[in-house]
Length: 296
Image 1 (cartoon, rainbow, N blue to C red):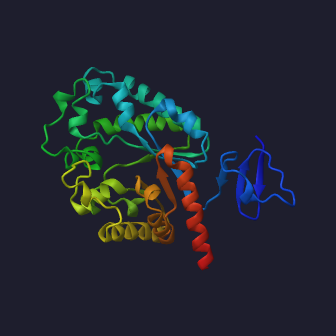
Image 2: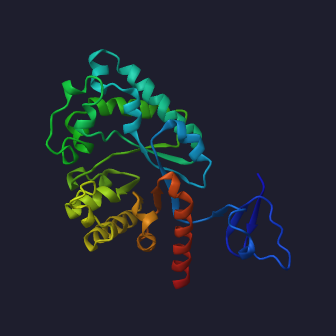
Image 3: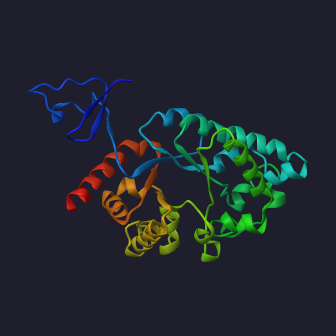
């Protein structure tokens, strides 16, 4: 692959570009070249579908910041406890291993952060056998899910751990994220974690008590609310002080450049966005880092 490096601007262009005395980088048509901005803040991508792994891996991303297990489980189609009841736990592990391995292979040495299953009880009930194992909850969003589920009933989590262990034997770039950590009782910093990942959508919903999917109150869902910003700043600075990584997953950084500037100023180490927002977010990060450096 041939690239052209503009050392003055810190930009890499795809293809060969000849710069003569009358040719300036600003004169190059943006629709003819693809800019590959280099940033200190890592840019990750959110993924779920194995069939998109190799296509997305070809983009200018540093890895996968959020690999959602939920889509993979939906493809498998059967409740993990149903596998266990049938004595087919190894079959579930094998299917999960194959799906996760696709991402490990596609991204090579780049990190892939696999978020352990965060299906809510109503979503689990849609899987074959799910109605036997799942409670009927009035508000599944705030119910039996996340780290609490793993602690109360670890059988399914053990299957996931077995799959992760198997995948990492061949693809050590796969890492594990624990989802929906609620309280300080589930705070693992002191016993050793590598980093934190902040879901801006859930954080905003929980702090403001607002359901963004409810049209009656959706107008009150605002990621730049002072309370949300306070929580973000505290989490990021705490991670920085503890010497661990911090990442944010959600649409906010790609929608609000001013938020991205704050995140970078606070010391966030990575931002993870959907594939269609990669290029624009990389440029936003690049411009924010330039402003930070200019301030000295």
